[in-house]
Amino acid sequence: MASHSHSEKHAHITTYKTYLIVWAALMVLTVITVYVSYVDFGTMNVVIAMAVASLKAALVALFFMHLKFEDSITWVFAIFPLGLLFLLITMTFVDTFTRVVVP
Image (cartoon, rainbow, N blue to C red):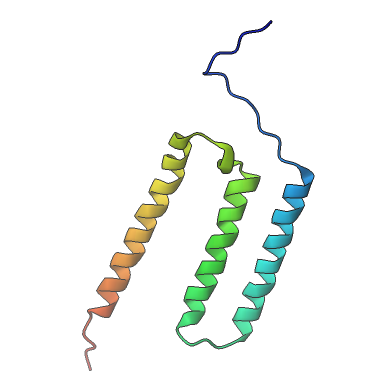
């Protein structure tokens, strides 16, 4: 009988069905992205486009890059840069809204 230590890594095998479901979701989100580009939602166009793009990126990272099955430290290294990017974008928007237009 073989003994297993807790430090051993076990490979996760994702089924073809899961890959096909994620691929179909990505195709639907791509159609939504194209549709949104033709409809004028005003200032919400950028927000909708970024939300759809973020969802697509999350699906790719979770399933095709197998982040869903990784250790928590991998999540820290994946989420921390995204948090910094969010902070940078937020600070840029705050600065943009406080600027005075010079005639």
